[in-house]
Length: 286
Image (cartoon, rainbow, N blue to C red):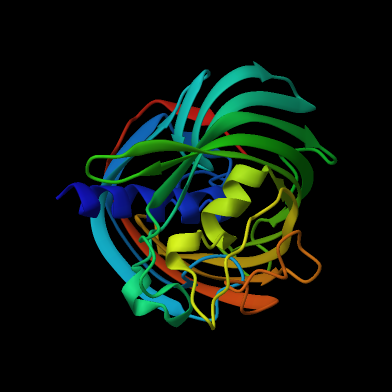
């Protein structure tokens, strides 16, 4: 049960943080901007993702769960992840944000076979968002500077695994090809401390083999990612989302690790959400 809950939280954060895939209010001329203060419903997500950055092994994961969205002045849950607003200015925002990543079974990964499994990862840290265009515009650009502390979580473990810093440039388009059709394109570059690199790429002596020599991970450049997402609203209470992410890890700090198997990776996402109930009170949110 704990693993299923962690999987659900991780997948929701992974999709919402990139794609704003949550359903939105659909009444009025500015339905994409005027949204209920809160809403709840049922959502489902499927993801086909690599086991870890630069892995050549993939996994298909899916789960359906209830969801809750709250769009308060300080605490916001659902549209863009989980955030606690410290500064909300017309031009920039400073908040505390949360991210998640899926686990992986080492026995199902040829490169890691015999090594400890990779746990669920949860990231928490400050985010500075700077709007490059009017946030209420149909075509919006922003740049984000995200710094997060990463924790590995399992049944009986909660262990700190280092820090990651990610500058990110994002484009969001509303009603691009038709009303209710939204597009998001995001480009990010990541740098991480040696502890997080070691979590993915280190081979301790006890797990060394002739085909997998011992290796000590080091910090530095982690990789570059490009995310492409499309969301559609076929009905006022339904939201569909499809997306893809491409990762490039060439010249990363640990590209010489025996666990570094692919300089290019890709991920595919599909999500569906149904709003069951929403508040009558509304707020203006981009």
